[in-house]
Image (cartoon, rainbow, N blue to C red; front, side):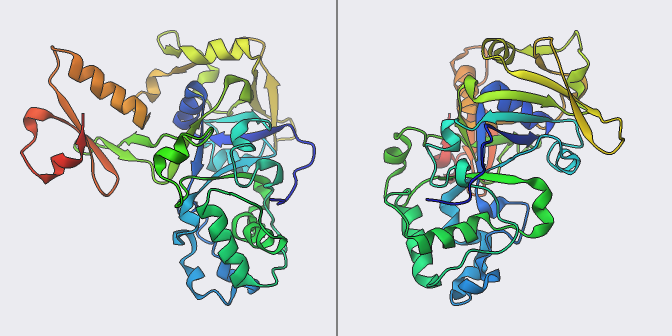
Length: 348
């Protein structure tokens, strides 16, 4: 697929809040999100393009079944945008991570690679036969990106997934798009192929509903070499070391071995922009004491591992991890559970 090229850039940037950034860096994961969970409610609503007026069912927007098969990674060409630091960087307390453009999840294991995934903030591409093109796009996604799209269908795919309103231009967005699960293959068949295996993410929520699934988010493992730079936000608490904090071990080792560059963001002398100050000391990530009560993300693998560890310990009460139809996940002691049909969906 052709898509929009991004020139000669070698690093693309992802903005994170504090907790999400800690998790992404320490666990070496990249998150792809389904379009129905985007923050822009107008995205992918292809009826707003004249070429697609014939497709009556397209006003479903994010909920279109064709789009629900996809996961989108949103990146940027800049690490210094104040609005993005405020919106996505948790009021400047988070991180920006610079990823190597050669990372396999940005290109090889995608149906639209980052090298051709520049967002289009202006005029949609011309599509001659909207209905035929859209059907070709559906088939392309449902088969996991097999074969090649016609030039007409490529233009339609571009308009559906890369068009954004001009008010979002400041994001300088680049997208990599994956097929999460094609309809023509079983989950086992698809995820056994290189680059397709993902984890869901659970989030601490409340005492009686301890964990919920983060909507539409799928995490894929990357290699330490895929990270090139880490930027600490202007208000990031890790810029000031706390002796009592628990250091996250993987990051320091990987940062040194793979020579990750480490920057602290400052306010530029002009008073209206940001500048980066490179640090010579090793990167250390840890949980500061004032942030320990924050929401914590847990992957499905970590959750199963915790449950297994507890249930193998004779000094601990056995627990059950139950996932409900609405995506909420609850950890409960076995002795507190009343017999019922919901136990059929439980797994220790």
